[in-house]
Each structure stands twice: as C-alpha cells, then as structure tokens.
Figure 1: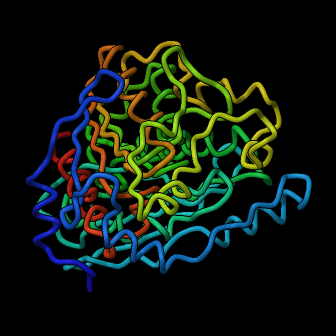
Figure 2: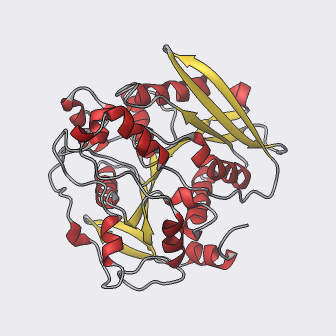
Length: 367
C-alpha cells in the first residue's frame, strides 16, 4: 500500500508553475505537502531517513576499485512498492549481442484490445557500475499497466569489469534487437520511446545519439529522469556548476547540501566512478559518454526531462534542455520541488515518483 494519498498525486498533476532556467522554460511542481522555499518534501525526508547509508568517503588510492565498486553497489536502490491493480506478465530473455551477455526484461498487461502496443525501453541507473532491473521493476510494471504498453528493461554490462563503451553498446544493441523483433513482441515499431534514470538516462541519451548518427529513426521520444549529461571537467560555454542556485533553509540546509554531491566539476581521477567505467581519460569528452559535449544536438527525439530541486545533476539537466531547444528540438522539462536524486527508486513512498509514472504514460500516449 502506498504511503501517501491519491489526492497528493492528483495535486501534482494539476498544479504547476513556469520558471526560467538557463533562459528556457521549466515546469516547477512544488511539494504538495510543504511548498516552502528551501524545504524538503516531508515524504522525501522520511524515505531518505529510512534509506541505508551510502558508501564512505574513502579516496581512490585507499581501497581497490573492485571493493569500492561492490560497496557502492550494495548501497544502491530502495525497497519501492508495487502499485499495480491488474495482472502484469513478466518475462526475461538472456541474449548474446556482439559477444556480450545481456538480459532484456519485458512487462505487459495480460489482456489488451490493441493489436500492436507502444513500447518503452528503460535503462536502469547505478553509476554505470551498479543497480539492476529490479529497482525499476515496479515503475516499469505500473507504466505498462497505465499506458497499456510493452515496457522493456535492459540489464547491461557495467564497470569496472566491462568499462566504456560496453554499457553503451549493450543498450544500443538491445534497442536494435527489440526494433527488429517488433512482431514477436507485439509492439508498434513506430511508437518506441527510450528512457532511463540517472546513469540509465545517460545511456538512453547515448543510445539516441548513436541511432541518430546512424540515420536510424527508431526512437520517437526520450524519457530522462535526472540523467548525467556531462562528466568530470568537461563543459560547454555557458555551463558552470554552482551551489549558489540552490535554496537552503536554516533548519534543513546541512541535509540538503549533502544531497547535491553529484555533478561537481572535478578532474579525471578525482571521482572513482570514472576510474571504474573508462580507461581513456579523453572519453570524458566523447558525446556518447558526455552528451552535453555533442557538437550537433539537432534531430533528437522529443524529450521529457525530469530534474529534482535537491539534486546536483539538476543544473546540467536543465542546461541540456536549453541546448536541445536551441537546436530546434521539442522538449518538456519538469523540476520537482523538495525532492532529491533517484526519486523513482522511492515509488510508493513519495507521491512525486508516481507522478513521474503518469508523465511517462502521457508521453507514451502521445507517440
């Protein structure tokens, strides 16, 4: 049973404010419980208090990358809730694509009146080193129910065992497999969206860039939840990360500042994630790893970008939306007030996560 009322979800769907970020429009959805400036959503606070502690502050040279990767993996995810009201079929395929073992999970309603359903291909987050399809499963199942869509979820290879560009190639190859086998899956190949959260959102973007660069019009929409769009000290004119854009309350400021630790501009080697996920420091500037660095952002799919007020990636996400629109693409950006990174993980505990499901369904219905 969800930990909040349906009325709060309804309020999120109805009330919004248009704000400006990097000179472009962003839809701001304040907390339906406590909309005071500088304050966290009470449901978010409760969920974060219950979440297990994250990995410690060891420096890269004080612990092996393998041990650090495992500690980080163990700290990821949150026990979210199944909100489905109808039966959802779950299937998993194990495949070998270009010599890499991958899994493609599939969720769909048992009964449908549609001859061909739209599809959403989701890619889970976890810093390119951890996470799993299990964290996104309840989100995928709820989207499958409410959109009457076939939702796929990709289990890809990760670092440090399989560094860049393995995960990127896996996701593209899985999309290719799904597209080429559309009849088998009962989907409309002309109504495919690709999405992901955090590192998964980054991989969704890299998949879209690879498809566009190959002249393949497979992806009709992107659903990006707080993705990483640029790493280390790679940057574009007009973008600089700053703590000054955040509103902190006197009561909650210490907690809020700890939540924005992602997205800081650091040199290669100062962030263990890069050491675990790439071998060549120059890959930081590769658009397949840092989409913000793509010199040509034209001809990208319609994009839904989700950002969170107390997320260090918020700035790069909203800057990227500005870049997309400037290049002539259509994009919708929603910032959730009082919320931090990885909100989809807390589905059933925080109403904003369910609202993201509803926004995803809206995108699928528009395909």
